[in-house]
Length: 624
Image (cartoon, rainbow, N blue to C red; front, side, top):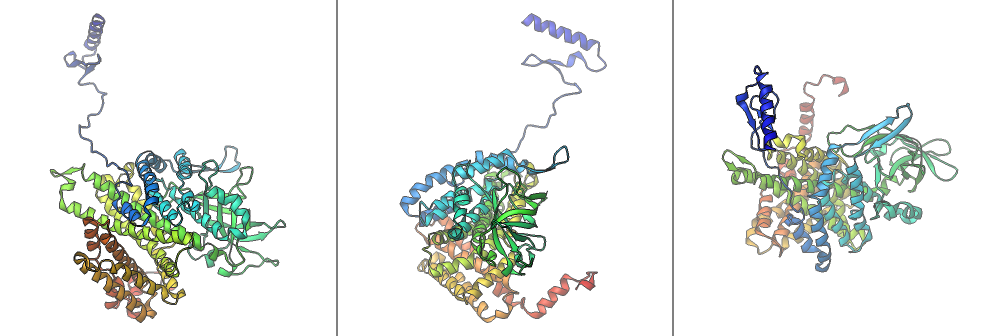
């Protein structure tokens, strides 16, 4: 072998002598693996240096979440917690490993629409990632919908489900979106299923199944061209009664998420015998339809296009033409909007869990990265300024998580019909507040989180920018901030103001728990004063409530979250970190509606000034 190798070297040197104009034999090197190389070879591996930055790593997302664990231990009966916590811990590891890998694959392999085949035939073939399909199976196997409807743990089943979804959402590749609508559809069938028993036999058992082969997901087709939240004026879809009692739907659905789902609920206007419809909310009914016929073909549905969105690109969201789509009316005439109220509650809860969990994810990643990244001679964790930034993000995340978990606990009581009248009022009032405020937090924290990674936070390959892009939808889906702020006012009005009194009473009940705690006394006073100011403003400024609706909702949120954080801090499981977080939360302006009222922000003069400021320099004056 040595002789052969020596002969090979000599042969190479002979070749080199014939090509001295390119390389010189003195620069030949024999490597350990026997290869002959030349240091001046014109084609060689790039030399890009020895340093490569370590990427952030995820730990067990349940074990590392002290707030989630503490809340569950505080409320869930010990024997039940003993049963569910091993599952949450096991799942907390999965969402950081194999499920997270699928999440990243979903990010890269976004849905595609093949409208026509090679011969010009309309096929509307929706192509999704294998990882997306695997998420479907995991959702069934893990019982991400089933847990809440099996009710094995009574009122705690919903909290268990929501905790598990909270762990799943940041690693779901946005499969959390169809799960939200599937959960909402299941709640509708639970609510109106007795009037339509076939829906339970046909759809409910599939929506809540743990068997991937049987498990269905649902869409939610409400938005049309004329509007999103304003379904009363925006819904143009018509429903024609058929001899067999079914209907055919004719319309254009503008924003239909999870187009690959198995069924959906949608709103439409039934035609009377004269071909007329009733305008407004009174003319809307709720319809059930399945996306495909028994032969697997679309149910007289054309997928016009997939939406090109800022984020949530993993979700196949489409514009759909309904041209004779077979459907079944499942509500009384004019009761369509009322029939979807339970769905809206559920999907708003999902929105909030996605907000809180996305904050937790970016904070966890930034925290780990701070132990790996070195700059200007020190590790990031050793810079107090950097840790201060992370601490502020952590405080926001803790507040959002406690708010979400508290509402999930109340939802669990409503599920099994043991919720009190006052708790129901509080839940109705605070669900839109929860959704709107945590969504705004999520965008802010995600943006701050990207900065913690410097330039790498802006590089799509890292998977980090998607957290911010996907967070932005949370402020829009299921009602924008202003729309939900007005919904808060409706909740107060419908209860004749009693919901606000219940809110105030709940704040006081939580503050009573910290009496005698000197370290939290000052913070408790701030929350108490904020609650007083909220009541006073609502009572004395009814004419300007709509103008102040956003600031009023923010005030409700910050004050309530302050009370929740103080309650957490003073509990038997409270830690020094809980106390510090609560005190820091209460240092902010808890009642911005009062602060802004003092500067006459809601006066008629300010209203005019705002308008003039916005349209200063606007050239199309004829439109004003």
